Amino acid sequence: MDWTMWVEWIVKGFVLCLILLTGFAYLTWYERRALARIQVRVGPNRAGYQGLLQPIADAVKLIFKEELTPGHVYKVVFILAPVLTVVPSLVLAAVVPLGTSFNLFGREITLYVADVNVGILYLTSIASIAVYGIVLAGWSSNNKYAMLGGIRSSAQMISYELTLGLSFVTAIILGNSMNMIDIVNEQRGLWFVVIQPVGALIFWIATLAEVNRAPFDMPEAEQELTAGYHAEYSGMKFALFFMAEYQKMIVISMILATLFFGGYLGPFVDQVPLLGPVYLFAKVIILLFGMIWVRATWPRIRYDRLMSFGWKILLPLSLAIAFITATGILLADVLNNQLFFWSIPVVSIIALLVAVAFIYRDLRRKSHGRI
Amino acid sequence: MSEWIYVALFIAVGLIIPIGAIAAGFILGPKKPNPIKEATYECGVEPVGEAWIQFKPQYYIFALVFLVFDVEAVFLFPWAVKLGQLGLYAVVEGIIFVSILIIGLVYTWRKGMLEWL
Image (cartoon, rainbow over all chains, first blue to last red; front, side, top):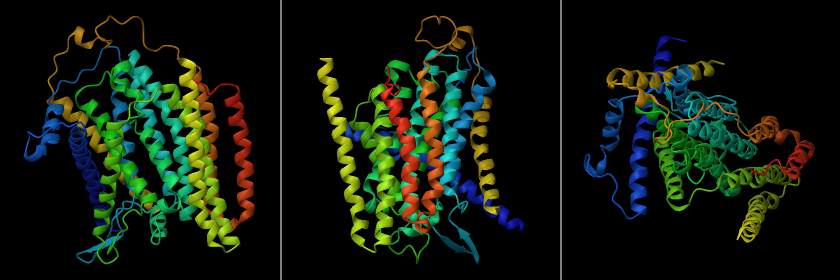
């Protein structure tokens, strides 16, 4: 390994980090504008053309703000917690392929940081580390609201992590590999969302809970917990929590796009490899709009229902989906009959309808009992 | 193996950003602390006691059930990768393995431990 290799990889790491940081800054702008449009408002439009300089103005304000460190906090953990939350959200992106590779002055430059053969295992392990940041922030603040927010958040995140893990299993079965690049290449004929629409839907719901987005944003419910685990944080440290949440939104949309929506694949991507990132980001922007739309539309769900939904509906459903996929693919393989392969989406949608019927029955019974 | 060096490099690069941000805020922000500002935020009411309180044991039970199923998910990963080579026998074995754990989930459910009180 010569030194140019090292320079190349460090530059690539910095570029990916910068892409994510800019993505975060403009995602806040995108969300505020989109939410405003949905609520028939205008949104931030003063700083620069169409408010495009708003994120920069916000960043400058946050840097020059006074940073309060309350007297009763556990200082080391208090400062460590935001770092522990942000780093996993950045590092997750390392195994997501943005494209194949292109030539720059005769050098072959790959459009991913690392081609790891256990990419999905890496994703699940790094995603779990983020829980530490949040629970430590809540605990070290020595504030009752923050403590409750941190505990709630960790309980919610570990509950939905199971569903997330089992949705990964579905993607692994379809892609026959834990390597993200292999999974993308496997989708050249057909995106996995066509074969397993319910798997993609479950993954998406679980990611909403994982990144603490509405309607699962119980940990930061303003009305009951003021701000949840980051109640005592201000200035740049608060901005880091904010950054972690939005970066996780971006990265997890990238993962969803890679696993189920064909990743960087698109027309002419083999001839012009630089189109790969463009396609991926187009898909990510559409998925992010879905998240914003959900936030604008649905009210927050109650905490007991959140936990019941995770454990009693999503966990069994995701297990069933994984086994439906495994059985369907093997039966199609062994009996050499494509009918079994195409029964996978049909049976999965039936399973989804059964789950929806269960939720409906439960909600009706509860509302009758209460009134 | 060399791919993991790049991941480690990327983690190092990723660490620079939050540390740099905290340092920038520390250097550039004003610092005028006073006892009222430093008090624990509880909507203006004087806080009573510490926040490091005892909390519901229910969280602990969820953590236990989580542990079982998370290990299961990790076991299912290699199973899912090699499914094509192992054939139908592996699917049957997987179903048996998962149904043992589902019995555990049903037991917790019946005991009412998944109800949030």
